[in-house]
Structures are given as C-alpha cells and as structure tokens.
Image (cartoon, rainbow, N blue to C red; front, top):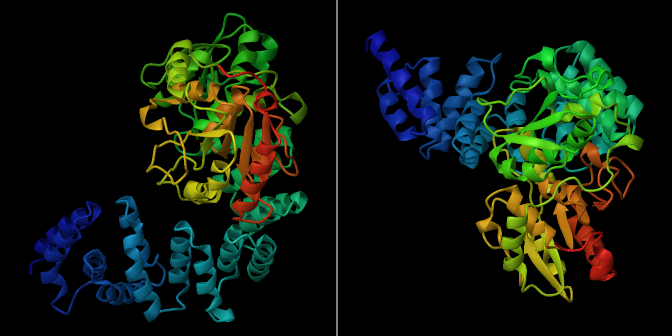
Length: 527
C-alpha cells in the first residue's frame, strides 16, 4: 500500500475514533493492521478501535506492545480512557484495562491509569486493593498515598507522600500531595512548608498555588489566603477582562460614588451566591453594581441586594469603570473572619414567583423541609467529579427524615432525576426554570437540608435555616472545628465523623429536627 494511502487511512480512522465510531475505524485500519507488519501509529489506532468494538483482549495485546515500544510516552490506555470519557462512556474502557493489567500487572504507568480510573469511578477501595497486590519495590509510594487518601486514611497517605519525597526530593507532585494531606490532618505549618517546596520545584504550577491558598483559607488565615487565591486567575478563562480595570482596595479608599462596577461569575453557582453579598457593600459605597452571571442566575439577580443590572451575555457587557471576579471580592475588602459581611439576608425571591410556588406548596402539612442530596456535576473536570462523589449522597439514605412525624419533604434537587424512593416526597423541580424559582420554593419552607452545593448557599443567603450535610474533609469555606458558619448565621454544620459515613450525619439531623417546632426552626417566617 502506498504511503499516501496509509496516511489517509490513519487520518480517517483517527477522526472516526474521536467521533466514537470505533467499528468504522476498525474497518478502515484492518487492511493495514492485519498484514503483520503494522507500524506504531497503526497499532495504536487499531488497538483503540478493537477496544471500542468488544475485543478487549486483542486490544490489550496491541496496546501493551505499543506501550513497551514507547517507554517514555504515556500508556496507550490513557488514550482509550480519554476517548471514551469524552463520549460519556468511560466505563467501557474497563474490560481492556483489566486485560492489560493481566498482561503487565506491574507496569507503573498502567497502575497509575488503573488507579485513576477506579478513583474517578468512586471505587477507592478497589484501587487500594489493586495497589496492595503490587510488590513493594515496584510500587510508587505517591500512587499508594493517593489511594489511601481517597479511602480517608489521611495519616497513612501522608506517610506514603513523605516516603515519596525522601525517595526523590525533586518530586514536586509528591510534595504537593503531602501538603494536601497535612492540611487535612490540621498540620497547617507543615502543609504550607510542603506546598512552598513544591512551588520552588514548579514555580508556575497553578494548581499547587491554588491548593496552598485553600490551606490558608481552611485555617481561617484569610488575609494571606485571599491574596494567594489570586493564583486561580492564571487558569484558562478566569481573567478575560482588562487587568487595568480590575477593582482594587485602592478604589475603595478613593471612593466609588458614581462609578459602575461589574461583578463576574466564576467557578460554581454556589461561589457566586456566596460572594455576591459584597454587591451591597459596593452599593453602600456609592457604586452602581452590575452582574455577569449564567442564565440560571439571571432572574435571581433582581432580588440581590445592591444589584442594579444583570446580564448573561459576555458579548453584551454593560459599561463599567471597574470589574471584579466574585472570588476576588474578599481580597478587595480585606475580609477576615470577624469582618465577613453576614448581617441579614441579601437575596429575596420575586413576588410573582412567590405567588406561583406558594399555591403549588400550599397543601403540604407540618414542617416543610427542602432536600438537596447531590452537587452539580462537572463531568469534564476530574477534580470536580471526585469532590462531587465525596459530597453527594444516595437519596435513599435520607429515608430516616421521611419517617419523621408532622414533616413534609420537598425536593430541591437539580437536575431533576428519577423520583427517589422517599415516601411522600414532593418534587416540584421538573417545573423549575432557574434559581429564581428555587428561591421562591425555599421561601415557603421551614428548613433546608442540603449537601455542600448551591442550594445551601442560596438558602443561607435568604436567611433560611439550613442544616448542611458536610463531608469529613470539608471545603475550605466551612473552616475546621465549627458547627456554625461565619458566612451564614442561620446555617448549622453536620460533619461526617468518619469518611463516607453519612448514616451518622443523617441520624443527627433527624434528632435535631425532632427537637424543633416550626416556630423555632424558622429564623424568619415562611413567605
């Protein structure tokens, strides 16, 4: 076959694989691959095509051979997982992955891929079992530490990360992982020293800089933490407006009377809901405040204290003198734990929405308790997927709340999923258009019980009583060793005593609910 024909087939097959057409790619490549003299590129693409067409053993044999020919490259199984993940079916890579492990069980690249695959699937115990079957001399302590951290054995994880840094003091990843583990253990100074070492080795690594900032914030060292958290603006897409017009503390000192300030959404919905509280402070300083937020938050913006205009289209920005990303506002205001602006609620539901949802919920008897059991999924962000699994719970675990006397449960879960098996659950969410509707529903409730997601922030911002189901290793914003939150006076934290133990958390919440009447549950009356 002429070289030009071969290259054309490779290009066609590559395009087919990216589109998820594995059978078509296999057909195009077969004349090249089955001659017995295939090159590396053909073998790689054909192995991927075989893996996607129910031939895992044949695929693994080819991909393992390609891996042996290219020891300095990433293992080809990472290409397979990347392709299938992009198509929303990462689980289809498992048969080929297991076949490859059977052929080369101690390949460190393959072990790393398999560990990551299992952790992203929420199967940390299996990942740890896999690694414990590897001879000690063949196993990366850093990889073992990652698996130990995922099952909640943070002390053992830290010991492995320490071992990794002793084995190679130039391993920035091991130092960064050690910093995260020590932060989780409450050893803040040691954690910061580990992060500092990692940054000396990788001074441009944005994620290490962000993790160091989060450690500072977690321990309430806000002034240092807010400054360090500016690292995030080096990530793609985080700093798109002119740097010269960024709002700074000097602007507050000079005065904002008559100035227009644009606040821009970043990261998750909950982040904007938490930090948009600063709009009221800017308005009190004389600024005209506009928001640039996703469409899901646009209507709600009309009920946010201090906000004049709301937009969702970055191509049609209002005129502004200064702009500020939401999570930079605490830095601008030099916020400490003592100066968090938490006086009174700052989000109010609109009257038409209140009327609509009041009629919808009017017949519900007893205490009305809203439930949110899962965070918003960001399937393209591996770290976000991992956190989402840690903070979310199966709705069936909330069954003890359904058994409480004189209680009506209301779903606040979006996206609306299949009806969970909770007796008597009222689920208005299929008719909900956006957060403005959710706010109106919350206004008619007595209590919100939520995992760490935007619903908890929205309810707290409205001054509604919130019981937060919090994971063992919590987000920085909930701090350490507290059951209250300086951000939301009406929020109470129910934290896991052990990793992955939600049953105890839910039992404590059920006990707390039994001790309340409607009158002392609600800090403010229902709408």
